[in-house]
Image 1: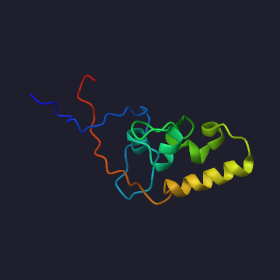
Image 2: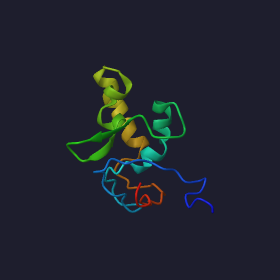
Image 3: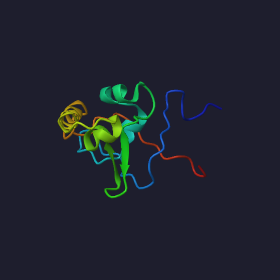
Image 4: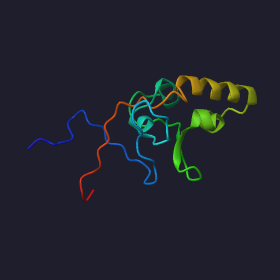
Length: 116
C-alpha cells in the first residue's frame, strides 16, 4: 500500500507552541512553516542551501513565534558587528521576505498520524 505522504511531501517539525499557519494572504503570525520547509532567496544565501530549514529561523519563547533572524538579529546570524551594516541587512531582509505583505506559503498542513 503506498504511503499517504507521497514522495513530494515534506515533513517539518514545528515548535509545540507555534501558532497555526495562517490562510494564504493573511498577515504572518510567525508559524515558521515556510522557513522550515525551505529557505527563501535570502535564506538560500544565508543557509548556503536550497532545501531544508533556513538556518536564520529563530524561535522566540517570549513571543511564542518564529522570527527571521536576518530581520530580528542579523548580527547573531551573520557574525557581523557593524551597526550600519546590520541595519541595512535587516531592512533588506524585510524587503526580500516581503514582511508585512501576508502569508505566501502555498503549503498544506497535515497533522501527524496518531501515535507519532
